[in-house]
Length: 615
Image 1 (cartoon, rainbow, N blue to C red):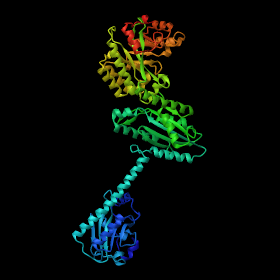
Image 2: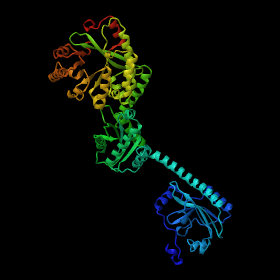
Image 3: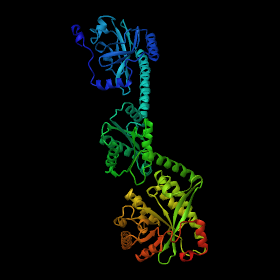
């Protein structure tokens, strides 16, 4: 501005909306770009139609006007303070100066009183994506001239064409940025994506020093799919955002926190070797979720599964390290919280994967089958029930132990389709047994429910519908649950058990004494029986402590109105002690191993349900 003080020229004022205007101009990301035919062809056509020497696409920057296209002018920019376009941006549509010499705003303008001796100017305003005036489509002549309404309309048409091209550029740029953002950042949590995480991990590996300790943690939210099923995806997104905030705000700012997909997050930590990051970081992450999140003013308790890998101990490449940590997280058991990768763990995970794949095939190809272990009244030795047990006869490996494959089924949630198959098979078998004439009272069959099934609405609904479809007497079907399955989500477990009890089913606690071992919580559970774990029975006739514990559990259970079943009874001396303690029912190899359905059917047809006659 000082440059033109001596000639008494006053540049256009800076508008009050300048900050937003410049911001809108920058959004176009077009300043100082190369010439383009789509704009040059338009300015050439404009100059020809209006018969003027100069036609411009002018963008008004902070201190300059820059020409995206210039027909008849050999410069790419001029100072803003002598530009006509600096005045035009105040107009709603168009600024026309028919004779600059007679217009007091421009009569002293250096471009008017000196070369190129501008006399005529018409500039139609160009607006950015947010409707701010960012420049003009303008024409210039060296002689004064009139400009009709028709001329104005034509120039506005051209300005709209140019504006559309500018907006098209912006939309393409926006789409490109969105694609880049989606590739490198999660759209829900805005944390780095797996791609960016791997890039940073690779960079850390390439540039690590001998003292660097690189640790990768993959964090899975337990049962996130059930949360989505119960409350919906929008609610689930709120959970993910809150998890991301808690991880990002609480961990070392030097760490990279990423959102891999769905319920999976990852943390990259680079620390000095003197710090035991491999153990301390998972502990820190778990501690962050000891307190509930608040989602829509509701408390939500989350449990995590964490897999850990280290460079170079557990892999040489970024992808290998991440996959090893991811597999470790996936294979964390129902009662566990953290897995750290090792050579032994690699073999274990390989076995885990093979079992998972085999289970899916076994369910499809009918390699799973059921057996039933008799439950006997301790006084009369009369058969009072059957516990359903699942078996797997693999064509390649033979019989696989349920101790090996059931945890895998629970971890991968294959237990849900397997559980439905099991229940349908049991109901069909119950229907057949109920038609046998020699059976005077309903047969009571026990089915084990895992924590996954107990907390899964679809599994509970299936139980109701299949028992109804098969016309099964509800008193013929009862369900065993473990202590650990209840405490994985106590309140929801209680609610679901109560719904099933109201419908007519009965529940008992399996393996009592191996989990939380508290009789106090039994008062809240709508159960009618507990099953004393075999670990108390095994040495009950040899170990005084086991004997005292068993006696007191039986007595206290009876005081609470609960019946007691002892499992794993294998000797007459064990049976005698349990009978003396008032135990109600027993099961174990002393009476019978688990039997196939056809053997049970033969016993029923013979009317042989008293184990005095069986043995």
